[in-house]
Length: 444
Image (cartoon, rainbow, N blue to C red; front, side, top):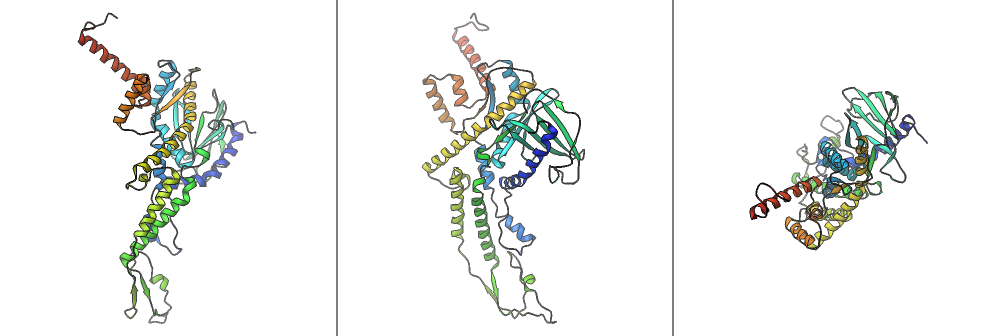
């Protein structure tokens, strides 16, 4: 088995190239750029533009709906709220904008199977970044797949006009480079080949600081249902075509001459471009039959049925894709499925996120045996009134105010600390106003 960065480089670049086509396909679906429905070979630019109007970003909506319920809000370390590790990680969270970085890697995971977190160093401080699978790949640890035996990051530096690659193995990292051969602005066609070592091997403490955030079964959230998305887009295109043809009238022709007045053959396939909005230039003696109107309501209902099918297999509310009325019972059931899916995905992303924070502590030289835990908002959305009722019930049930602030009000650790300080100040002010303690100080 490979051990050094140089030995791992050809292995990881080959793996990255092998998965690149599928990642590109999923990225198209998730960004609302799904492949165009096919209806014929004789098309032109105007027809291509018309077909693009048939695409709806169902895959992106599905990913956004689930990602919206997985919101990281802060980090805790054990039960000590004032330990060096807690203080350090809150600074790391703030300086790296980890609320944004972690949400980015969650959306990437949902959209294209896997995202990555890299904990690096800049000016002696830890830097945690979210990376897409187009640039990063790992050789996973068989027992803990979010950890890596080795990792590769490859990218294009347009200013330097060079491609670069970093390869990590436990305790060592090496950079490689190669000349740019394309003007695409991204890493050239394949990652494999032509790399040369760029500097000496760098040593560091600890395991590989690259962590995979992988979706369930290694699939994008919508990947098992791509055929349904294609069917929806095809149905929408057919409706648009029928509507356009009715607007401009479909025509049938009889008695078309084979030769023009000069005896030349007539290529009617070029003169009669049957496309929405196309004008037909015919001799005056030719009769034209025009079509009657077609009822498109069944097509509209078919689109809604397909969208409901997609919502069902994704366990998402129908209203996510069809802003229409839905029964209260149906909406409740759909939200339950969505919430359960969000909880499952949340549990999957916690380990690599917490591992990236442990790597940050290692960079800062802070050791400890306490558990690092990333905190999330409760995925079950409720109104303020419902939260207030739940908070009162939890208080009556003996729950601490801090537990209520965290689990019902969904406050971050920093917000909870500020709230506790404000409560203490209010209590002192109340005691002073009632004469329980002298104003201006306490004898306690």
